[in-house]
Image 1: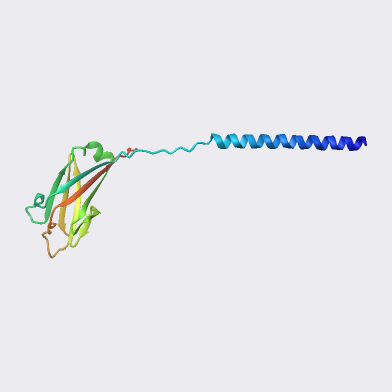
Image 2 (image 1 turned 60 degrees about the vertical axis):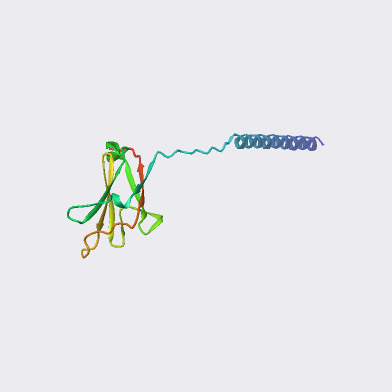
Length: 155
């Protein structure tokens, strides 16, 4: 009988300890889950975007009649831009003002490209066909979008 009483006491003690251990694990888990906080980090873009309207009459034909050029004056293009940053240029598709194409590209037989320098971007239009050397101007005005993407120069 004493052995039975001792067995019941030990069984009850182990059961109580299990309850305490389970309660401790449950409390720790609950605290861990409650302390988690969802954070949304939104990093603002430091890209700079400029839009221009290129009138059909703003293109200038070179003396050798091989290139039409137009200038976009952008004071934000400086030495830092030239040395460290990326510049993307898009223009509306000459045949469809609802679509944009990134320069350089070829439309029909004419190649569109660009060159950047301090304070400006020159867009060139040249024929890609050796047979027809003078490029064909777009039928109307086109829109240009210039995006300057900052970057950190690493040696």
